[in-house]
Length: 324
Image (cartoon, rainbow, N blue to C red; front, side, top):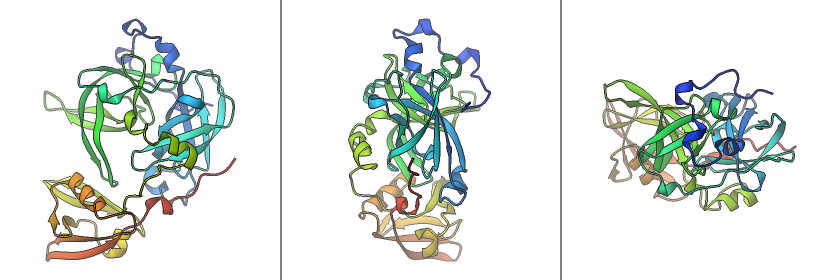
């Protein structure tokens, strides 16, 4: 089955085999096409859709590493391998905090695993490849344009994300491969950055692979990271003119239940004013684990409002993976 449809990367940004000191074709054999089907009534369907398509990469033990939003709440997962074969997969583990997920193929996989590298050694201007199912013709030769903090509107924070350009058109779960042929990140987003001429240029954001190392064993054995769960509020926020503005609310989530409205401006957590979106998340998470009460000061046209949001564990709202 075709996983990513009929598309090609422009020839000008495809990686050229002779430019690398490793067997590029062999490395890209580890890349897997992934398609998942999610129930229409699943919690994440409204924001992520009920059919999700992207990539994964074979790592040690024949497991497939991918980005969590592709498989969370999936009732079926299909994997398409570089040798043209397909197999169903089962969600083995998912970590909301990093965004990594593991899929167990339900068939024998006789393809190479991509070696896990050290993302801390990667720096701005380093050459990288964002791989995709389909080999060189569907992969992108890129370079790292930034290493910096990233705060996502869905209560997500990376201390040191990897940003690369040119952007891959099918970035989800795509392995970021360094000049040594090792896995240093996993594609998560496409964003817009300002170019030298003031125009907007698409770039990819990847999750650094070093975040996987402390939790890989837990994901295999427990299906989750063995650490306290962060409190979740059910807010979708963004920075607008230097303020943290509520753009949306999770239906039935803690923030909605507490009376927070779209358009509210979050001013403080407890007695501490917030500086930006990342600072907001950190101050909430410092209060304790999931279930902790989170006092917020909200700015509205009629004046400030103090509300208390009883946080929860987001994972408790998600459908469990289907068993095969």
